[in-house]
Length: 326
Image 1 (cartoon, rainbow, N blue to C red):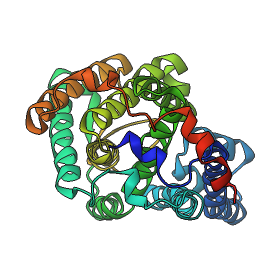
Image 2 (cartoon, helix red, strand yellow):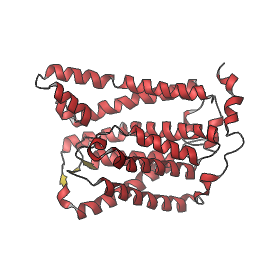
Image 3 (tube, rainbow, N blue to C red):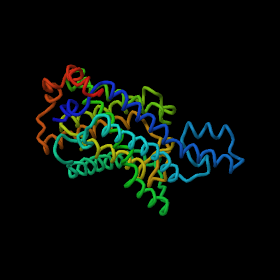
Image 4 (cartoon, rainbow, N blue to C red):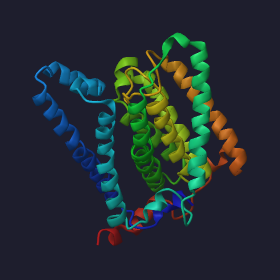
C-alpha cells in the first residue's frame, strides 16, 4: 500500500534528514538564475533603487525589475526545477527507491486519475469563481493580453506542474509515509504534513497583506484536503492533479493583485476576501471528496485510522539502520 512504501528501499531516519537538506540545497541553487537576472536588471536600469529591490523581494512583482511577468514566472519555477532534480537524485541514490513509488504503490502511474483530479477541481474552481464574479462584479476586471497570455499558457502546461508536483512529492509522497514509520498510523502524518504545508507558504506576499493566521486557515486547510484524498485513494495521483489545477487556474485564468503568482491572467481581482476564499475552497473540497468517494469506492474516512502493518513502525528504521549506512 501507499504508506507501506516507506518500509521499502533504504529508510534510515538520517537518509530522510539528508534528503530534506539536499532538496533545500537544490532550492537554494535554483535561485541563482533569479539572483543573476535581478543583479543584471539593477545594473542595467539606474532607476531601480534599493527600496525598489526590497519591494520586489516582498511582492515578487517583476515589473519593478522591468521584466515581464512571464519571464518572472519562469525564473521562479527554475528554483523548483533544481530542487526537483536534487530530490530525484536523493530518492534514487540514497533511498534506492523507484521514483514512481512516491506516487503510487501500483506498477504504473494512473495518468487518467491525475487528469480526472485536475479536470474536476478546475471545474469546481471555475464554478465557485463564477459565483463570486456574479456577487462582486466590481472587484473583477478583464486582463486579456493575447500574446502574453498564450505564452503564459505554455508555461503553465509545461513548467508550472514541476512546482506543484515537487510540493506534493516531498510533503505527501515522501514525508507523510516517512512519518508513518515513527507514528505507526496515518492521521498524525496527515495532520503534521498539512501544518508543514501551511508553514512553507507562510512567506507568500498575501500573508503580509491579509495576516499570517488568516492565510494559514487556507493553507493548512488545503494541506489537510490534499493529504486526505491521498490517504483515501491510497495514492498521490489525485492530489497531483488538484494542486496543478489550483495553481494553473490561479496563474492563467483568475488571479488577484498581490498574490504570489503575479501573472497576466485572463481575469484579475483588485481585492479578495480571504475568509470567503477559504470557505469556497472548503466547499469545493467537500464536493470533490463526495464525487471521488463514489467514483473510486473509497469506503469512508475509516482508512485514516486503519493500521498500516507491522513493518510500518519505528522498528523498521532500526531494522534497516546498518544496511542503509553501508
